[in-house]
Amino acid sequence: MSRPVTDAAAAASERARSMPLTPVDPPAAVIRALEDAALPRIDPETARRFLDLDRRFDRTVSALRQELARRQEHAADEPVAQPASGWDMTGFVIALVAAPLLLVAGGRAGGAGSALPTAAAVWASTALVVVAGGAHAIGAVRARRAGRSVASSRHLVLLTAAISLAVAGLIVWRAGGEPAAAIVVACVLAVLAAGACVILFVPAAREAGSEARTRRAALDAERARRVDLEAGLAAAIETARSESWELLGSLTAAQREELRAATTRAVAALGRRQLLEPDVLRDLRAADAGQLRYSVGL
Image 1 (cartoon, helix red, strand yellow):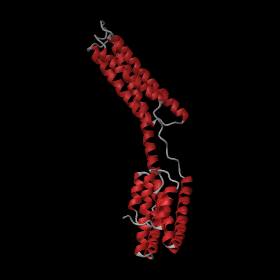
Image 2 (image 1 turned 90 degrees about the vertical axis):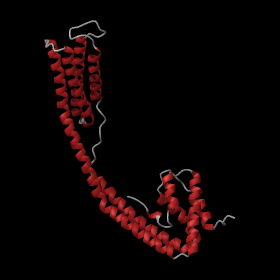
Image 3 (image 1 turned 60 degrees about the vertical axis):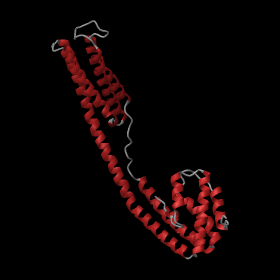
Image 4 (image 1 turned 135 degrees about the horizontal axis):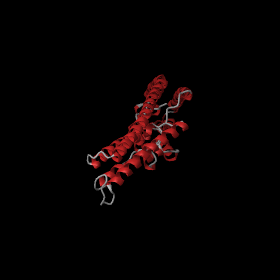
């Protein structure tokens, strides 16, 4: 036979069925609403003393949060990572086409008889890496004028430099050891394109390092802004929980069991609404009476 539903359990269950909920509601706020519904039916005086404790605790937490907000108003903005430049992406894609042209070409530097003669492949690949280097240069200039960071695109620039060097090597390989003037010119152009990309990469890498240091400094400053406030919050939580234990200790064992049963029944009703995240429900089911209601953050 099931146990009778007490007034406290009925009140807490009704609160669970009717209270506004969102999936991200903090467990502390939810359990406080349920316990506040049950406690007046168990011991009105203890309920009143809990209300006084909650008001003092809320004032302390509110003051800490306001102080944190005041400090954050004067904090320096953390650098926002910029997406890869469209010019740098274009340059990389153009360079990516260059090496395969030399791999699929047939014959020697002056040969013919294939779908793409080697001579044509050499000059097409050389032109592609030169154009790719130019695209990276345009992207860097436009970013500087606009005051935007180029750090996020630095790896694309470095990859283009590597591809350009690979193209220079493939040109030499396709030349078959013949130091034709045209081959030398094409090889030099590819190497120059690689050098230009390396020159563009160096300041971008420095900028990335500077941004990383700025982000670390911002995180350190954030921790410094919060450390004393977090300590104050931890002390307030500890004090509230200690007073809560004292208030619950003034109840009889039967009354404490009635409160536990009421909140258990109410949490089950919350679960049937299927609105709260599983982690929140798990915390609610495992909560000790009068303790979870003070587990808050800044």
